[in-house]
Image 1 (spheres, rainbow, N blue to C red):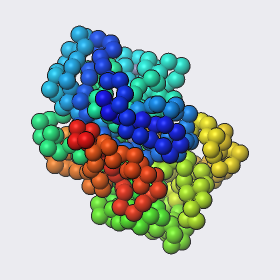
Image 2: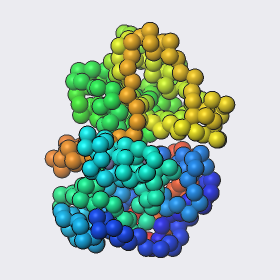
Image 3: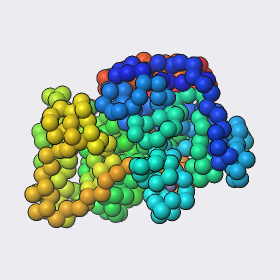
Image 4: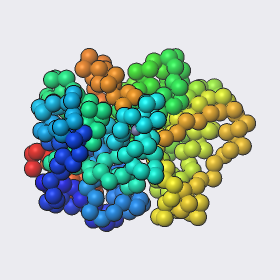
Amino acid sequence: MRALVYKGPRDVQVENVPDARIEKPTDALVRVSTTNICGSDLHMYDGRTSVESGQVLGHETLGEVIEVGDAVDHVKVGDLVCLPFNVACGFCENCERGLTGFCLTVNPGKAGGAYGYAEMGPYRGGQAELLRVPYADFNCLVLPEAAREQQSDYVMLADIFPTGYHATELAGVLPGESVVIYGSGPVGLMAAYSAMIRGAAKVFVVDSIKERLALAEKIGAIAIDDTEGEGADQVVEWTGGGADRGCECVGYQCFNCKGHEVPNLTMNNLVKAVRPTGVIGVVGVFMPKDPGGSDALAKEGKIAFDMGQFFSKGQRMGTGQANVKAYNRRLCKLIEAGRANPSFIVSHELPLKDAPDAYKHFDARDKGWTKIVLKPQQG
Ligand SMILES: [Zn+2]
Ligand SMILES: [Zn+2]
């Protein structure tokens, strides 16, 4: 099969690799029709993770089941399915509690597995013609028939829609509240979209990239341009003391207005922009180790955090990757009912062969490259 393979920093190629296949009776094999490039793929692309050369990337995948193992009972050949980026077992202590992002079975010695990702287990990614899905009955979200013609919406259920929603869940967004979101990349936009779905009265999105802020405005958020004065100060002024809730949707590779990487920037700005006793949800990726980090702390996966302010303000914080299965079925029903169309962020739909070029543009934050959807069956 053809697949997008990581070769080394800023070097990915489409190559022929051995076909994905059924390895255990609980597996399904999926012919991938739609798969996305994610902002978190860029951490690997940039050489900022331990991912090994030869890994097939991609963890946002939708396709048709073409084969199932003998122990697969519910999922059938012909089903159109969307796969959570988390690989999960369904029967461990964490999965039982709905915390599928921290499954204790699928990545021995660690909590949590994923397709095509550094440190997340032996699973190849979905930027390929075929994908092996472990524990298929548990992991496959079987999509409604209408999804066949609307794949760009439904594929967002693999990661960024639930991840954006998770940020608002960690922050505990309630109807009528104000929410500040740092980052207007795809996840930040999905967090803003989710905050509105949950009934937030005011949603602020802080960034320094104008075209992304324009998308935030398009869905009804208030765009805060960090290049026009300190974003946190603007939010405090707008809200008369700080937003009720805050979402971190940037992560450790955070750049200031001058283009310098400052890993603690968004976290400390959130402490500033959220009101006393407010709550912060963090879904932007932070790595336990970052050899390419911009300072000595960052190399150790640490940041200089304004703990004093955080404590004085009595704020709380929730962190971690999304438990996609906790949300994807309900978010799917919102799409099916025409109440959500997360594909508004898609800027490009390309055949798989164009993926290396797309990574280059996406990594450079080139104008117009907000979210790339790949079509492996189209070349
Ligand atoms: Zn992703
Ligand atoms: Zn589990």
